[in-house]
Length: 557
Image (tube, rainbow, N blue to C red):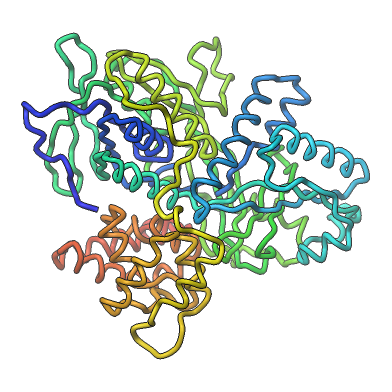
């Protein structure tokens, strides 16, 4: 986790083959793909890795049930191809990062008789498109069996129609920001030079007028530096157009930003192993209710958005989600139960070849911009690996760089995956000596460490034992003090935001617990990074402002 692996790249130093701008899922995936093909890669990110869209997703690894429905009714082969590709990648992601992902059964409730054959046929088609990559075949559950598996499911809806049964299908669920961190750390293991909090200020130009690297500003030290490279790849998500304008100030817009809001609710809103899909809300969207990290998350909305690093949810959007799930649950759905709320910006890509802006694609767009800048935009988390593969193929097709090998990422376990098994938590529990009290580790803590770090969990417990950092950061939550030190030393964690929101998920789960953990996190990070008292105060203020964002308080309250 060293700070700047290539500061002071001298004027005579060999340029990188590729510099990737943007350290979200797509950019990190490209850095890993390129590094494993033997290319010399640099990755720069203006905030933290995954800080934008990549940490604020629905946490599903999915083919897209609703895209399949659109493909069927619209006889749209393009949509069907998207689903087919995504379902293949879904299985690949679950195999390459088994510690950070798992299959999740999701129920589709049927309150009208015709919905049973309709959704059953739809989910069987989903299985058929997945073929050998099916996780578990979908099935029909009777009303009694559905209520047994999902006790809080309403026996009748607000129109008085009784539950006729449910169709259960399977998709993947994952820890998005930790997957992004795993991609970055794995890329670094393969030789990529990576840095967060480095904002691209301008493009460097070669003698031929083509982009030959980037000029960056280190936002933590204020220093500026150059990263020279033969090819510049723009994977900046919602910020892609800003990077494209550095090559051509008059370039046409490529990104149509759309905000999606999610909320976190107590675990009793859903069983801990089954999700629920509300297939049709009042505005025609689907809303998911999913168990995640010992809580329940619900979302999402779809509204136009400004492009900002810190999008904030609105009360109206939170109200919309609560209203959408209210009709399907026996729980008294209350605004006061919302433990955290967040907004993420989907960087939907406009088709640059289309005549009108209505042709927004959920697919990705890969193109060569002015000055030879290569831009990848759109897509979704599930297909990050195939998008990265296509981007590196595109880079190689320019002829500016040569790889020493083929793409290997389809069967490349990410950091933490190699020694992971579903029973790893038992090994953690039996080998860890709790430093501050007699007795064994709490099983919930052992499971948390296994699921967050895979086989790297033993390094976390080693730090806990050696430094006496085995206490929990917040009551009722499994995160340990040692995780702070691990994140700083091994995962490029530089601010309290990085730790509370992305290396752990406390901020997304429960703002009150985050508030409780904040002082100790500042203290531990300050000791590791040598913060002054003023910097500690500034970091604490940053943490408090994030807590306000996620609890929907106004900035000044």
